[in-house]
Amino acid sequence: MDTMYWEDNTLFLLDQTKLPIEVKYVKLKTYEEVAEAIVSMKVRGAPAIGAAAAYGMVLGVMGYRNDQNLEVYLKNVYETLKNTRPTAVNLFWALDRMWKKYLEVKNQTFEEIANALLNEANSIFYEDIELNKKIGAYGLEVVPENASILTHCNAGALATAGYGTALGVVRAAFEAGKLRKVFADETRPLLQGARLTAFELLEDGIDVTLICDNMAGYVMSLGLVDLVVVGADRVTANGDVANKIGTYSLAILAKEHGIPFYVAAPYSTIDLNLTSGQDIPIEERNPDEVRKIGDRLIAPPRVKVFNPAFDVTPAKYITGIITDRGIVRPPYKENIKKLFGGK
Ligand code: MRU
Image (tube, rainbow, N blue to C red; front, side):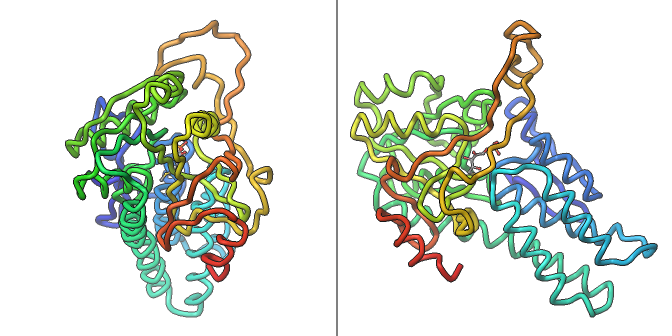
């Protein structure tokens, strides 16, 4: 099942807010519609929002009406897409890559510019699948035989162009016959684990057991987890990792139980401009996401809410970062620089 695809000058996006109840693609024809889809999380997951935004730039250029300077117009498209979600660096990475391509070809004809931007968006998309397969292959090294893996949120095919990062490792282990089972945290408030990870793994015939977020510690204490693998929205130069809210607690629980804790992420998630996780902007979302489950109110409507969408796991809790260039281990600052210094 494709997270998104491009056909007839339209971006078809699998509406993830409807999963697993309904499998429905929305047809996006303008960059404003792409921006809205990212904000409302019809598409979500760091690499997937990067790829969607890249196609958003293509829709932007296709909607150009010749009544203003193309560069000024496109910069506005870029800014609109950039201002959708603040934490995942893949969004900015993809938009910057599209902008760089535009600057390279800006003196060519309009048609050539539009084609070059479409080719670049396609490269971002297809490259991501390749990166995830490499992450999966490297990740195999840390997966023991007959492994039980716990994961959080959804860092799967649905969060990327395909195959997934954390779930890329799970898939590679499954394909290699090393996987026994997966525990998926439900991941409140928006339930990406319950709605998306459980759905995606079941579709592939992978043994998955759903648990509420507050069950992870007990499941670990029973000896039911061999390793934890999660995705990332941003990795800073010192190895700190922003990922879905709850990842930090999971990392501490894993440490206490002596369970290896791995993060899986492509190079596009690494942000060498930030020295530590304290500098990562953490998105806060609508309080109703906590007051409700779906459309159903589960708390007094006026109760105060704190709803950060992500947290930061300090590098000291992370056993290794599985990337498309190999597994990075401590000391992170030196080793990240070695592998990604020339990104
Ligand atoms: O709010 P979301 O659903 O976009 O958050 C997604 C995550 O936190 C994922 O774990 C992360 O983006 C990695 S996806 C390969």
